[in-house]
Structures are given as C-alpha cells and as structure tokens.
Length: 182
Ligand SMILES: [Zn+2]
Image 1 (cartoon, helix red, strand yellow):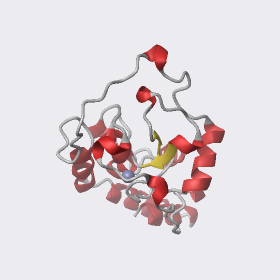
Image 2 (tube, rainbow, N blue to C red; image 1 turned 90 degrees about the horizontal axis):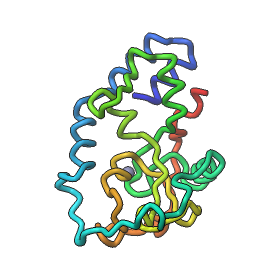
Image 3 (cartoon, protein in one colour; image 1 turned 90 degrees about the vertical axis):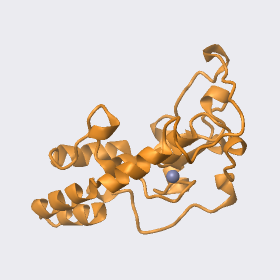
C-alpha cells in the first residue's frame, strides 16, 4: 500500500496517496510489532543475563554517520538483514509526513506513530551491541527493521539464538525504501 501511495503521489493523485498511506496504518501491524519488542515479548527468550559495559568502556561514537549509513544501504538494500521486512529511512518518512501530515502521524509514543512506518523504520543495528563493546564498522553493522533491532535489545546473536545475517545474501527486490518519493 505504501508503494502504491508513492506511485499515486508521483502521478499527481494526492487523494489516492493519502488513502493508501492511511490504509497502511493498520492495527494488526501495530499488534505484531508490540508482540516483538519490549522486555515482556514472548518471542525474545535470552539464555543469559547481559553484562553491559560502563559508558567509559564503550566505543565513543554511538551511531554511524550519514555516509556510513548510506554505505550500509548500498550493501544491504532496503530490507531487514534479519527478517527481510522492507524498510524505510527516517528521512524518507519525514518527507512523506511533510506532504501527508494527516495520513502519517508520528507522535512521541509508540501508539501514536503510523503502524507501518513504525514497523518498517530502518535501523542501523550493531551485531555486537554498542553496550557490549561493539563499534560502528561495516563488519559490525546491519540494516534492520525496528522490531528486530528493539526486539533483540542488547543481546549478542548467540544469546538469543539468531543466525549471523552475513550467512545469507541481502534480499534483492524492487522495493526501494520509497526513496523515489524524493
Ligand atoms: Zn527485521
């Protein structure tokens, strides 16, 4: 529906674009996202308790810069490297929200954010979490969806029985992260 929305927008049909964006704000998607992230998720059952590093022990730079993020998308495309969900960059979401503010709500709480844009929110996830000493090198970073990033929290892959995403090729599809909206 979001792809159809951008097609309609580019064809000059803003009312159809609005209709499709609203249609993707679906409570079933929100329920699915809520079931994955958070400490009470039934799907995330770590085998150990994590021991986080102190702030002073962590790599100083918390997140990759814009050029490093762009490089990750060139390598990983616009799909989550864990689950394959199509993802959308924050900047792209903001541009669409500027054009369609009523159809794309983005409040301060989870419940007041557009359900599909929230689930498909592109993340730059540390394979070894930052709080466990991981750095921002490309070898330690993957593009993911928000549920995979926040669902894993600061556990190592092996602590939650996740296969290393580099063991599989990135998904190639026609999904462009809605980048053509720009
Ligand atoms: Zn994912």
